[in-house]
Length: 410
Ligand code: HEM
Image (cartoon, rainbow, N blue to C red; front, side):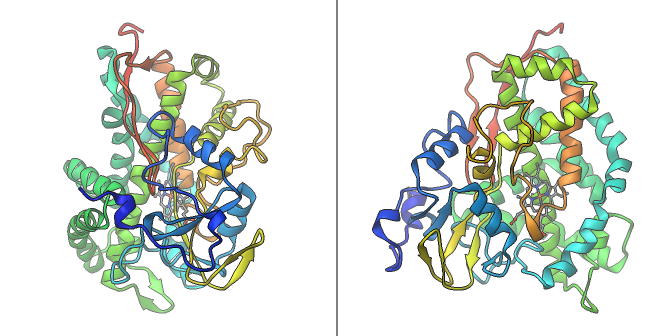
């Protein structure tokens, strides 16, 4: 079997100082099987603000939260044209709008921002709540569930299929394709899953281009790019990112949050007692998300420069992992502890700057509804004593499996 680290291992370029080389592989972080974010925090504590790793094609890693925010803001020196580690072959599809730099980026992004504006999300809120309540009520009498498959993946896939007006029966097939595309361990595995998603979406894209409806897919596949209709290829690529961007991320965040609450009776009790206090729940959610950054999206350096005294060259890849912002004790004291009294959680969970997540309003709403409806029905729960949560790191940190139990008559 080929080890991921070996297959994509790069030689140290001459400009990288030997003392800044560290073994760091986003797909295999020591300690992540116990607590992904404690593992990230340990890397951050034991590493310089910037270091270079030969893993996944060779790239810089930034651990300083302030520097990460600066990089995310600076789309001129830090391009988004290739965001995946290890890099996908150049012939592969671009992720749209993620891998397009300003100024062209705005043409692609603006209509999506419009489609996901707060009033649109408000209009979907009752449906999301209804589905959450229905799913929880079905699970509750059993006194336990496998949270990821039985709940976390259900809400976002329903929301996506509704947004794009595609049949709900396709949900299982789509979820498994997205899993392979995001978490496949080799470039080949991810490419294969991406092709399957592409084939599935291509049909819908063609239909929406010839006869647009009022759904979001119809909108993004008919975008005007500086006076020209977006090409069919780009429209399919856009639909693909919209799908993977909204599913895996929300489910992963739910998984990390419920795991934290399952392991911390104090936080569970405080949140359950104040679950009808909308403002408190909104704040508590921000703090829970700060502790649990998930997306690892890289950048390409466009010009030779120095950062913190280190020489970087055009073409180098750099990872401003957004979990490091929330976990940086210089920005958030005692970062591994969720503190509902923290004055202002500083984080980049939804990114920062030009590419900041356009789905953030929707994601926050799904997460808030989940917390409110889950905790008001199942306030007391824990990890099944004979089980161990299964987690993974990578482009999106995630919880793959999480067995929960609660008193069946609660
Ligand atoms: C908890 C859930 C979510 C998290 C943590 C998350 C995280 C992120 C992050 C960090 C970025 C910025 C990437 C970068 O700077 O390179 C991003 C971009 C994006 N997200 Fe999300 N996301 C979430 C939910 C969603 C949802 C629900 C949707 C769609 C409905 C969505 C669609 C997108 C799209 C299309 C982009 C690309 C934006 C651009 O390049 O301008 N995301 N997301």
